[in-house]
Image 1: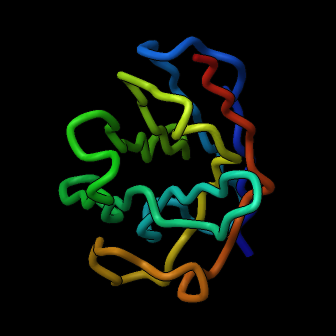
Image 2: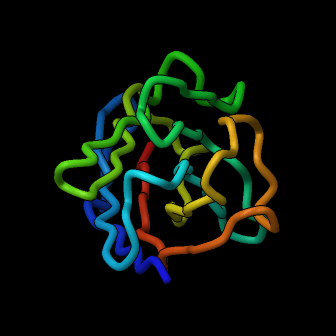
Length: 126
C-alpha cells in the first residue's frame, strides 16, 4: 500500500501561482510513477500531469502545458505540482495518484492508477 496526502491548496487570484504537494508513505515511493488529476465542480476527474519514477520524464495535459510543472523529490517521498498563470478554469480539487511501477508518463486514465490521495482544493478567483 502507498498512502498519499496532498497539501498546499487554497485561494489564489487569477494570474497567481501556487504549489501543491503530495507526501507519500508506505511502499518505496521511488518505484512509482506519479501523477496529478483534478476535478472541477460538476465535472469528471481529468488528467493534469505525470512524472516517471526517476523524475526524468514528464507529460502534461494540453490545458496546463507551459503553466504547470510536475516534479518529485524521492529523498523526501514527495511529489509537487507548481502552478502558475492560474485562471478560474483551474479551480478544482487536485488529486495525486501513483501508477503501477514501470509505466511511462502519458495521458493516464484515472482507472489505471493504483493509489489515490484525498485531494486538496484549489480555488482561483477572478
